[in-house]
Image 1 (cartoon, helix red, strand yellow):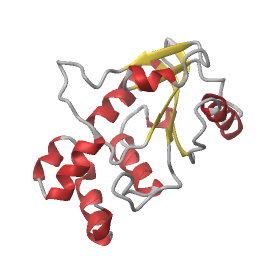
Image 2 (cartoon, one colour):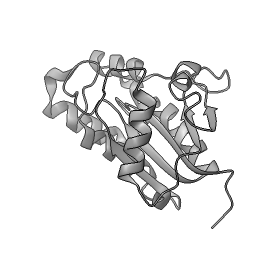
Image 3 (cartoon, one colour):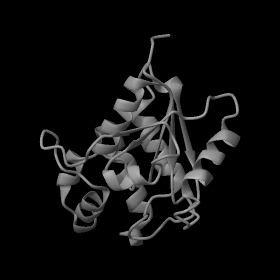
Amino acid sequence: MPQFPYAHGFCVMRTQPFHIGHARLMDAMLQNCAHVTIILGSIQEQGTKRNPFDYVTRQKMIQNHYANTSSFGRMNIVGLADIHNSEKWSTYVLNFIAKAFPNLSKPDVYYAGSDYDANWFEGAVPHIEIIDRNDPNFPYVSASMVRDMLAFGDSRWKNFVPAENHELIETFLAQNKSVL
């Protein structure tokens, strides 16, 4: 197995829907971490404008993108409900990881998409890596932007979502017309 700077990296994201910015963050994790845990948050919410996709569909989006890669076997994708308590959030997440994956080492790095997201785990893990969504060399993308495009029937959403998920998203939305 190749040497990695980190033993176990994790991130928390909603992926509503999974887009190229999420993939960029996960690619960095897979490049630098022997094991990767992706926590899909807000699994208690679905079918709303902010959280249209259910947990299984969001998990499938990530699996579709990485299933045929050599690093897929180093990836864990799990869902977690919110607790709405910012003081306890990092402990809640880290305890969840420890219970869900007792054979993995405690995470030594948290990957975030912004300084704001990084703040949640400052001091809770030894390292934080920020894959900035506002990098001038990378197209700006947000899930809110993609959801708005989907709601307005703007086909440019496909420029921001990996191609292997276009049909999945279109099918989901056709079956759940009122979510956007």
